[in-house]
Length: 84
Image (cartoon, rainbow, N blue to C red; front, side, top):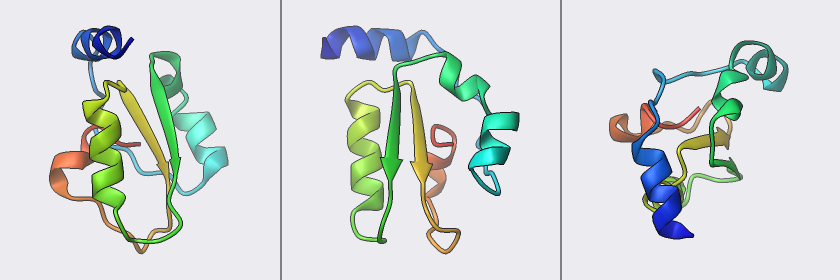
């Protein structure tokens, strides 16, 4: 299954990085991120291991990552393109 996810991920286009004010805004303006998968949704409670967790899911082959996290947490530039 993992090889299939990686192949699918390589054949999809990533949109530009997106930031949303809340879930309502995301569902209204960013819903397209959910239409092409596979999609991983990640709930971030603290700033420990954010990048490791997100990179793990990218390497596992998820085409889209949706991270629910406080505004105070920042993503490294190399992750911003693939995380909504």
